Image 1 (cartoon, rainbow over the protein chains, first blue to last red):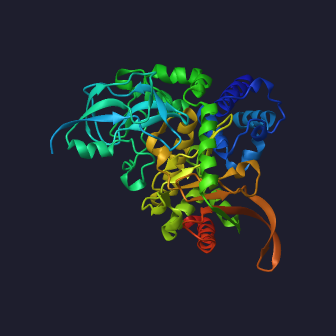
Image 2: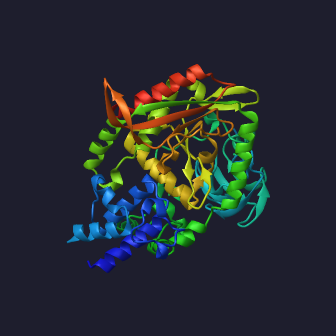
Image 3: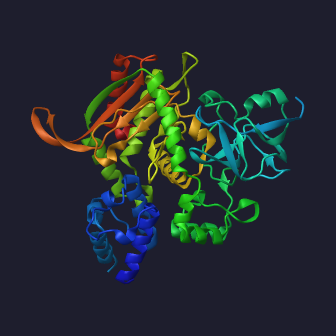
Length: 81
Length: 390
């Protein structure tokens, strides 16, 4: 899976968690929890969806690595190599 | 015991509701229904609500069609029952905020929109697809025979999540409903407030250990420890669990915890999780996820909107340390959990950085006093710190 595909899937799942937000204006280095008003339940749903879609089981200890869009994509690409 | 025709009426889902719009029927004339079956979806200020029937029988006639707005108490359908008519009339959902004892027996299974024996109607292919996509069938409207969910429904749901979001939640109307309930609360309820800070290092460690071995779908959140601890503490402190009505306190034997859920884009609702004191943490987590998802998708059942016996709110996520709640009438207490913050804390005689949470209580002084409230909070704190016993 290439980086564009990972990006598309991650953004789609982010959109499912925060449907009213305009992801096109999301800064790549913004804190996702603040920018998209994501709480712990939302984040768990996002992790669950990523697990289903990409097969990447994100341990809780790695949650801080998914703080921004950029860092999340870097983390997921790394796990999928 | 003779068969009788009874009216199934537009229910009142709170003292602030005077009318509702029928969105869709999930049954047709001739269908047999059982007590607790969801028969229709109505639109209220609180969003789209699934309404249940409170007696068994057969749908004889539909009186109100989709799109029609009618006052509370208006007959929506006629039901041919097998029990006496007078008993059945009393059992219709028309009474405002029924007390827990007369509320429908909560099903031990998760009940979703279209169910037969607690099971969502869906084709095997749709089930497979939903599983592979991680889609919860309970959030999808079926277009197949008898409302069954088919593959196309799931694909459509995936394609149009935004559209789906718009269905059923009218935020402006919800604001009006919140305003009415909160203004009444502040007018009528003599609140008192207490707070209690505890060190939750053990709870956090226990959660981290438990979740380390689990995939995301099976992980627990701190919120379930909080909910369960409150429910168990209520068994010892029943004066915080029930309703103030007509000048007296009616304690509830059932413990239905209203769970404050913020609606994205603004708005708030506190639908009930039923019998929380009797649920294992895993089951409670499953129900909480399901409730949050259905709330946000606008698929909440009538009983869930009206039969909470206490409310738990955790605004903690946004970084506030403590919240002082406004009690949701006719309930008599609200327990708040702040965010978990790292603070200097005395452990034995040394100062350490520890995760600390502030638990608060807003309670009705007509029913309880600060002394009992303090003991109640202390009990909650003790239980939260012993998660292996929850």
